[in-house]
Structure formats: structure tokens, C-alpha cells
Image (cartoon, rainbow over all chains, first blue to last red; front, side, top):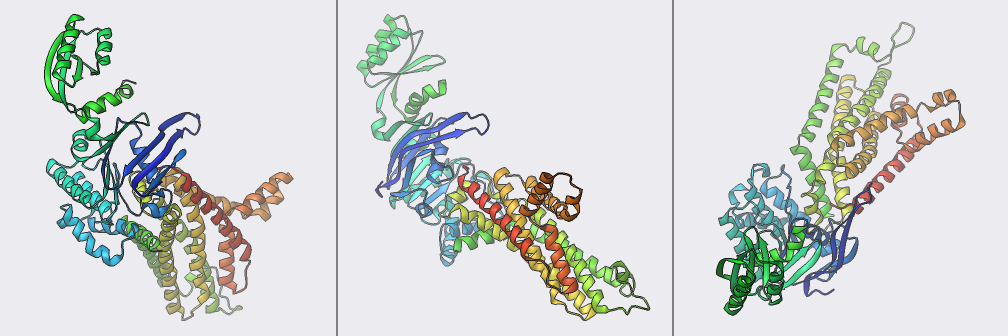
Amino acid sequence: MTADFAIETCGLEKIYRSRWRGREIKAVSNLSLRVPAGVKYGLLGANGAGKTTFVKMLLTAVHPTSGSAALFGRDARIAEARRPVGYLPENHRFPTYLTGYGMLDFYAALSGVESRERKKRVPEFLDLVGLKDWGDVRIKKYSKGMLQRLGLAQALLHRPRLLILDEPTDGVDPAGRREIREVLDSLTAKGVTVFINSHLLSEVESFCEYVAILRSGQLAVEGKISNLLTGRGYRVTAADVPEQALVEIRRLGASTLPGTEGVTIQVRTREEANAIIDRIRAAGGEIESVAASTSSLEDLFMQTTRPERAA
Amino acid sequence: MKLFVALIADTFQEARARWLFWGLFALSTLLILIFLFVLQVDVAAGAISFLGVQATSRRIFSIQKFVNVSYSWVSIALYVWGTFLAVFASSGLIPSVLEAGRIALLLSKPLGRTTLLLGRYVGNLAVVSINHTYLVLTVWIILGFKTDIWSPRFLLAIPVSIFLFAVLLCVVVLVGVVSESAALSVMAPVGLSLISLLLAQHQFVIRLLSSEWSRQLWMFFYWILPKVFDLGNAMRQTILFDRSAAWLMPVATSAAFGVVVLVSALHIFQKRDF
């Protein structure tokens, strides 16, 4: 475990056991992950893939059944290890009896920010997230988007080195999303590690440098997004393609994705596209469409999580 | 320490915002007003008769005795009223902090779970202590001005009521941590107090019990549960007669009960996933 990695987990596992029936659910299984310090990292997975459990294990809200987790080289179970961490949970419930100012002040105090410093920083961060005029208003009057922005300010106020954000733009309008992205960009320019757990694939693709995809609690794909995406290519959609032909097509290196109107086949080059079209026709299949495409994170996500979704 | 203070301050803010602080204050003020009214209605004979002090031609009425009897009854009323009111008011303060989405954020901060729960416990205790002190002190001042007798023994009701509440709050915390239910957090300590009152009649009851094991079982529960009756009785004896009462046993066993329950709550809280 070294401080070069903002997050480092080794064989992390969480098994939930029902109290009376003794049934076991493996939420996270043997998960080893390294997030280099200073990068923008996205964590993806279908619902129930174990993303939130993984994040909660990092922050000790959930105890791992086995394995270990470290934040900047320090055991995550030590309270001090969490000092450089800013966190925005997905379904946050901020105390509604507090005002925006009071809420930021309270959480900043818990993060160890001195009183004098809080007086200076709280208005500054309210301004940063566009809530300058809302500081004295009780949180229960805030809209969902405003709560999200306030939550982001809460996560940033103690100037963390690692920011863990669970669906950070959930409920925020497009303009607000752009503002949040700009804030996060400015942070990464200062060397802050941003770890995003999100369902918005386009957002993760445009913002993050690294990505990990979880499938049934296990790490299915991990790496630099630029290396994982195949780049430009062609997308062939065909109907009535026999299974044997699809096996041969996959052997040629193409990826196939079944859909309601047939199968979509992704290939890298025009030559490959022509060869596959010939093979489909020879097997009695019907070509529905051929289009130039760029392999997206969505494609990667769909391919990776397909067995899970099918199950 | 600063984190601990922040948690206590937050409990105060929550108690204030949920009207618990002001509710307790208002009900205490209501009790004080009722007390003032009772004193005003019939100070000379009615109150004396009401409080059970007989003034006859053969027995010289002592104002000092009247005040002592008043103090002892009022202290018991405050002890019971104040404690149950405080338990009702505190029931929601632990489950509210354990709400999903709130607890996860709190646990992500650089503070231990023990600090978090103890901060909440102490904050809650502080809210109630302020109210108890206000209630007892005001009644003491009213009685003092009314009779010109200032008996500091009456002020014993403050630490005794706070002590009992501190013990029952441990039960509120344990039930809150296990069940996250505000209703159950009230039912458990109130039920326990009623059982404790019943168990305290052991000298009478064990004579009625036929088997040895049932007598031992009765005494076992009497010893392990908090001594709500014994504490109140010791306080009344001290205030009324100014003589040393049997404090050690009820204080020690109730404190031991509270410590065991609170440590259990902390242990469960440490192990729980949120």
C-alpha cells in the first residue's frame, strides 16, 4: 500500500448474510483496484453491481468481510485516513433543520476545519456552487439540484485530496452540470483525485481518464478509457443471422450485441465490415443498416454488463 | 475534542429545530405555573392538608416541616415528570442520525464511531440537564420566596433526575442503534422503569412467592435493572428528613446497568453496516 495511489484495495469482499435464513449475498467479490493520485476515475456498473457497497467500504460505513482498503497508503479503517477525503453520497439526507451555511459549517467542523477558517470558507464555497443568496435559508426549502450543489460544496470545503462523488449531477439541470464539471476540472488541475460513481456514461466518458466496470461485484474491466475504447469503426445491424455465423463473426474479432431488431456488430475497419456483410448474406441474414461509428463507453458498458443484465 | 463539541452543538440545534428543547421548556414552565397556582390558591390550610401535614391545637404547626414535605413531594413529581418527559423528547434523536444518507456522510468524516455516538449521547443529556435545572431551580426559588426558607437539599432533585435520565438514555441509545425506531426507543425505557418500580417491592413480594427459584429470579432482576424507585425514595428521605439515605446500592447498580447498556450500544454501533 503506497501513497502514490489515492485508493488501493486488495481482495476486498463483502458478503451480506440474512440474520434468520442464513442466506448469503456476495455484494463485492475479491476486488483489487488501484486509483492513481491526481486522476479522474469513473466507477461503472449495472444496478446492484456493488458500486455503492465498494465506496461505503472505502469510507468504513460498511465493514468488508475480507480484504483491505487504503486511502493514500493509510488503512481506511483509521479515522485520520479519511481526513483528506471529500464525499458526496448518492441519496444524501442533510439535516433539514440547518441552513445552508449551518450545514457547511457543521460538516467542515467534523472535517477538522478551524472555526476562523470556516467563517471565511463557507461563504466562498456557497458562492462557488451558486448558492450565495441561499446561505441563511433552511435546507428543507432547497430543490434537489440545490441540495446536490450544496452537497458538493460540503465535500470540497475542507480542501480534500480525494473526492468521492456518488452520482454528483443527479437532479442538476444541464447548466448546473456544466458548472459542476468546470469545478471538478479546476480541482483536478490542482492535483485532486476525483472518483465518480455514476450512471451517466457520456459524462464519465467525457470527464474521466480511467474507468472500472463492476459486474456482479467483481472487477470486469479496468484501465485508461483511451486504451479501452477501440476508436473509429463501423456498426452493422442485421436480422435473422444464424448463431453459427455469429460465432464465426466473433472469431474475426468483431463484437456483437443482440437487440430487438436483430444483432448489432461492431468492427474496426471497412474491410472487416465488408467481410462480415458477405458472411451474413451467405448465411441467409438480412442487412438492416451499416453506419460509421465510434466505439463509445456505452458500448463497452453494454458488452461488459450483458451477462449480468441477462441474468 | 472539537469534533465532540461540534456533535454536541448539532444535537442542541436539532433539539431546538424539532421543538424538543422549546417543548420541554414550555412543559416545564407549565408545571411551574401550575405549582404557583396551587400555592396561591390555599397556602395556609389547603396546601397543608393537601400535602398531608396536620396542624392541630396539640401539635404546633411547623412551617419548616411544611416546606420539607412540599419539597419532598415536589421533587418526586419533578423526578417522575421530568424523566419521562425527557425520555419522550429524546426518543428520535438517535434514529434520526442513523438515517441512510446521513450516517454514511458522518462516517466518511475523520471521526470514530464511538465519538459520534457519545457526542450524540452527551448532547442529548446536556439538553435535558438544562431543562431539569431550570425546572427544579425555579420551583426552589418560588418556594424560597414564598416561605423564606431556603433548603438546598431540594436541589438534590437536579443531579438525581439527571442521573436517572442518563441511565435511561443508555437504553434509548441501545434500542435506537438496534431498531432505529423512535417509538421503541420510548417504550423500552418507560417499560423498564415500570418493571423496576414493581421489582422494588421485593420485600413484600418475595414473601408471597412460593418457590425459591422464583424469589431468586425476582431478586436477580431487581439487582440488574436500574433502581428508579430506590433512587426516588432515597432522594425523598434526604429532602424530607435530612438524614443519610441508602444511596450507594441504587446509584452503583443503576450506573453499572447504564454502563453495560451503553457499552453494548457502542459495540453494536461499531459492528453495524450502514
